[in-house]
Image 1 (cartoon, rainbow, N blue to C red):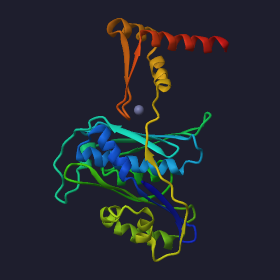
Image 2 (image 1 turned 45 degrees about the vertical axis):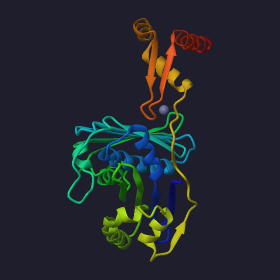
Image 3 (image 1 turned 30 degrees about the vertical axis):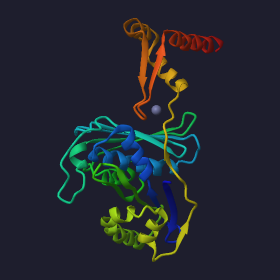
Image 4 (image 1 turned 30 degrees about the horizontal axis):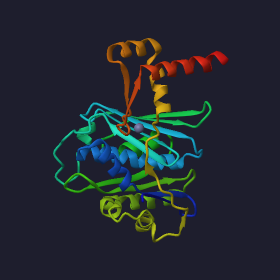
Length: 295
Ligand SMILES: [Zn+2]
């Protein structure tokens, strides 16, 4: 089971989260048949989404992250709600030679672009944030996103390890965020700790989120919170997709029905295909008319 372990260190001045997202990333590989470089890029964003979702307070708060870029991946889209994440890349079969150190070249796959974050906090309360891609490592792109867009200094290290067949053997990472007013001498210590981020692949491969925090902060007093288990799950359903049919508009629905006899909607997050025949489309619009006449 995947895990998020969280803790406070330095007398509550620093928040630390460690994640094991191996099963989430492997699920993405199975659903989307992603190439190694696409798996690493998507897997890292899925990992961060699991973290950011866990940080949101309300059970129905919704998170969406999209990276629009000029590299061959073109875009990465990830969404999360209530402990579940889901995502896809525009071009899952992008193939690039690995770097000299064996790592996947996500920088080249992404190129330049922007990170866009939307947090829907219920009612009319919605937060949007945006920052530039720094170097396509995802790690540095999101460290910069948190710092520049959310005003939250952040150090983070992510890792997605694959076997020769391209399956995910381990994925996860660590996110470190100082609280407001954190004294300078602690920030200096955090910089020292971040020097050891080069070890992240090996530490994530242990698949033990709790131990990952110990590995970095074991010399200090750590106050742990309960662990939670994020998972990959899509939220699509016939009911949800009926809303997508309505978003096409009545006239366009008629056009598609005349041309093809039914309306097909593909959920990009889980590749489930929904087919609405003529009668079902009529029902969707009659239902809409009924509910809108009442008001
Ligand atoms: Zn779906």
